[in-house]
Image 1 (cartoon, rainbow, N blue to C red):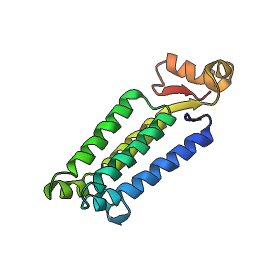
Image 2 (cartoon, one colour):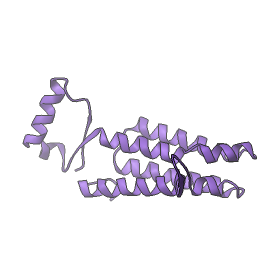
Image 3 (cartoon, helix red, strand yellow):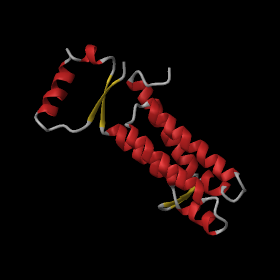
Length: 153
């Protein structure tokens, strides 16, 4: 099954996003700066772009599994495309790719989006009768809640 169906699936998606982020942009960290496979492979012609696009597609796939909003997925795609293209520019682009942490930026954007989403296991029909759903619905109607609601069923 491609889409997350439970909170355990969402936990595993978050773990996958964190692994991709760390591997891509922070394998070796020095203070707030880090270098990952994306920055290291950029010096090998073609390898950096292939890795960058592959890792970026993995983040987008995880976003799809987590039922992220299409606009968020489009933003992630744009960041990854810029990251891959910058690394293909000779010398200056390679240095810029070391500093531009597109995978980290994309992963953080997706994690924030997931944190701003209320996930209910099951379908809308199954959730309607639960006290949790009624509470969220009353907060939304009162204007006290602005997070998205996603049903995993």
